[in-house]
Length: 320
Ligand code: ACO
Image 1 (cartoon, rainbow, N blue to C red):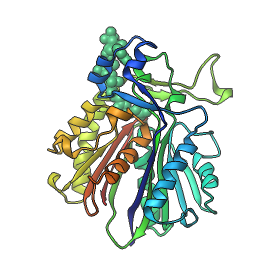
Image 2: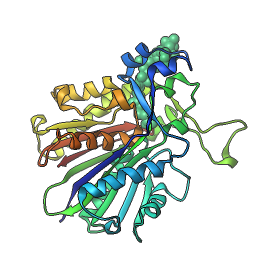
Image 3: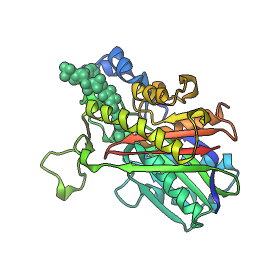
Image 4: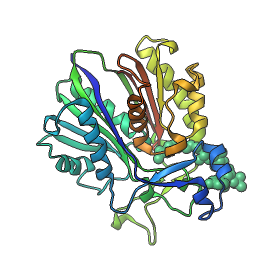
């Protein structure tokens, strides 16, 4: 059976940066509170002229260049997003048109902050089963468009951006395993209400609502468990993992997973300070950064993990 290998990465961050200080004049908050509670100093904010698909296009183009293949060779596009251009067509279809990819399977995955891991898991199964040879897997989020800018419990946390990988059928080892989970009984803890007009209450807006503390407690426990599940499935020890790429939700959640792995923070790829929580985009953004700056090298083993609204959570163990 073929393996699915990451052969190229790419990313995009909008130009505008909003610092914690910038929020102090907008809402009742401080730089100190935000940094101490989350590890965030600033985040990138999408321009009016940009969309989820336009950010995905730039990230995907970089990933294709890095892989040394053309868009026309792609036979599967999956975008993890909760902030798509439209309800339908999918942002993946819009991207297919923008990139000039011919007929192929293209769809979005809505798994909140776990969207990229879900996309990677699905693309891995496609490739292993022979259903695709070259896939684009992307996380792209225009989070600013789903935030209530007067809600201090959410608006300071999230940022915008996109990250992409090319996943190719290969004889070499690549994605070693993925582990996808959900528990919909937590649906009222982190959600965005229905944007469909006929189902809206009067005056209702499609903004994110999060009971952060409840999310925090479950995330720490759940992500600790998934580390064991992933290593056990591969008969590996903690020391076999070279790098941890966590979803960048909160530096304290990240540190607790690193501790579970006995991993020093130097081996954890962090972007949260400069990028905030970019939801489904955070893992591919961090991966691209660490590949391009030379930290992550060919042959190394990378553990990726994410947790988000649903709840949905998952992990991927990848040989680069
Ligand atoms: N500035 C100042 N004070 C604030 C702010 C703010 N921006 N936001 C909330 N507060 C206040 C609260 O009102 C509360 O005040 P009170 O004690 O007077 O009621 C106090 O700070 C503490 O609030 P908590 O929510 O208990 O703060 P906590 O320490 O839990 O930190 C945070 C909040 C950062 C959101 C944290 O809970 C967290 O990171 N949770 C996990 C988020 C996550 O992982 N989400 C999943 C991915 S997102 C997705 O799927 C889309």
